[in-house]
Each structure stands twice: as structure tokens, then as C-alpha cells.
Length: 287
Image (cartoon, rainbow, N blue to C red; front, side, top):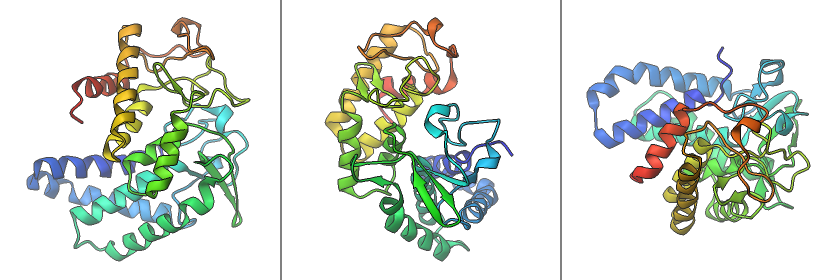
């Protein structure tokens, strides 16, 4: 148990990306069993709720969530039972779809197609916040009843690199994360500055994470939001020029002034692998 609900999905996605790019059949044969085991785990783990979930008992006293925002206690407090994170459902959709395309004659093909259909049909039903015109970052599932978190976070931006949301929902995501309470001159915040839980000095409650922004940037490009992608890229380049350091994360106050990293509650790592990789990709602009 390594307390991560997303790593296996991202492994499948990364493998498919490499194999499609380089047509490395030898590598495919080498990892076929690992990919099959990853799919087995994914399908088994999502059997209980159809969505891919983990139980609150798996995080208590350890992490705020099993997603990438594992330290955002202010965001995920109050969740109980089985927990479904919004970005994880997008990763799952992408991983399953890519696996069926990569290895169409696999034992799980029909099961995967059923799961893809379920996700397409039910994502909005469970996660969409109509009053906000945006997706909730997570839902609790208890004995068939569900309740979603009523917060605006960056997590839904990760859906942009997946084929899960419909086009109109992607447009809504982009519009919302480019509002002034989320978008800053140096990137997208993890949590809206309008939220009562917003605290730019906290680890993931309004700070800006380059890896988070990189995934959103990739999604903008894949989904054809070229103008928005160019703007976000320019903001992130301004950030690394200004900070002169590949911090794990950085933060701005409500007036968009950069907070001295030494004054943050948890001092960010630097250099940090996610950040270095994100900025190298952003600067290269060939991802």
C-alpha cells in the first residue's frame, strides 16, 4: 500500500504515450504483463462503486487524499466512506481507452468499454455543480448516497487532457479556471481565492504548483484551447524567471504579490523533480 490512487493510471497513460510515439514493440512485449496487472487492479478497485475510489480509512492520520493534492486538508476535510476524486475519473477514462487502443485483443476489452460508457454517462450526474458551472473536486459515497465538495479547485482542469468531459463542459472548465480568483500572473491556484478555506500560506489551499499547471497546460493544448494555453505558458515562464528557482510550489497573496517561500507554513522543496520536469517541458514547448 503506497497511498496513491493515481500512480497506476498514470503508468498506463505514460506507457501508451511512449509506445505510440516510438512504436517500440520490444518494450511493449516486456511490459505487457505489468500493463495487464495494472488494468486488473483498476477494474477490481472500481468494481464497488463503478467510479475509482478509496476508503477514508486508507487516509486517516496519513494523507488528506490519495490524489496528487495529498496535503490539502482544508479541501478534503469532511469526506467519509468511499471517496471519488474528479481528476482520477479522468485518468481512469484515459488509461482504459488507451489500453484498449494499444492492445485491442485483450481479455478485458468489453469490460473496459462498459466502464468507459459508465463514466461518460455518470460523470456530470455525480460531480457537476450546476450553480458553479464546474466540477466538484471529490464526492463521498456512503451506502449508495453521495455528497460532493462545494469548492472550486484546480483538479477539474486535469480533465482537459482526457476524453471524458463533453466539449461544452471543457469550455466551462477553461472559463472558470481563467477567472481572476483562480488565474494569477504566475499560474493557476489550487483553490479559489474567493473560498473561505483559501489560505495562500498553506501547502495546497491556494498555492500554485507547476506540475498541476503543466497538466492543465497540456490539456488546453490537446483540447484545442490554443489562446488559453499560450497565456498560461507565458504566466509560468514569468514565474520561473521571477522566482529564479524550481520550487515545489509557490504562492501569491490576494493582490497577486509573490509570498517569500521562507514564509510559507511548509517550506517548498527546491529543486524538486516535478517542477524541474514541468518547466523543462514548458520551456521546450514540444510536449
